[in-house]
Amino acid sequence: MPELVPWFLFLHVLGAIVAFGPSFSFPIIGAMGAGDRAHGNFATRVSYAISTKRVIPVALTLPVTGIGLIWSAGIDPFSRDSRWLALGILLYVVLFTFAVTVQIPTTRRIVEMTSAPPPETPPGSAPGGPPPALMALVHRVQRGGLFLSVMIAVIVFLMVVQPDLGF
Image (cartoon, rainbow, N blue to C red; front, side, top):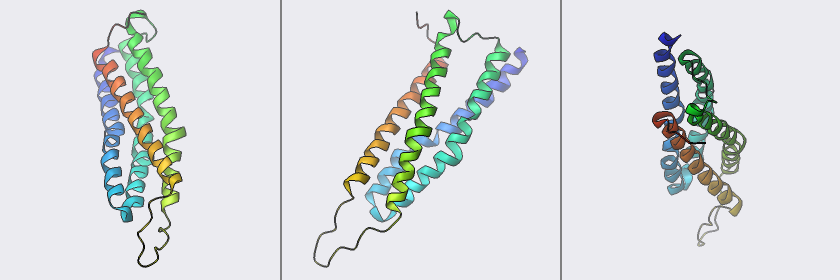
């Protein structure tokens, strides 16, 4: 059904942009929240809401439109000429699994830890920094975000360039 290819391609690319585009703003949102400790929880909640209400739900449409695209174009993702596609699918599964099982729960934990106001500082003393456990979670989310960004870039490269992987 080659006449459906442009429609599935449009929906697939639009879904990828809507799902993953906002995630490239998370480092900016996080830096702004870290720079203004009183608003750190809000910044984290914004990133969490975008992830759970936009990124993950729309990312779930990509396998559907991808399968429609593969079917309508008559592509065998496991043929030698389409190994780039099989690798992209595998990386997507890794990316999505990591996002749902590691990144989202860790971000939720940061929201929980920062929901209560910090303890009051006695007069005349310097305010304390964030607890080490919180900073460990923040660093984990930052590393996870970098991993996910690189994975998205690699998948986009594979889908656009369609390289001959030679194996």
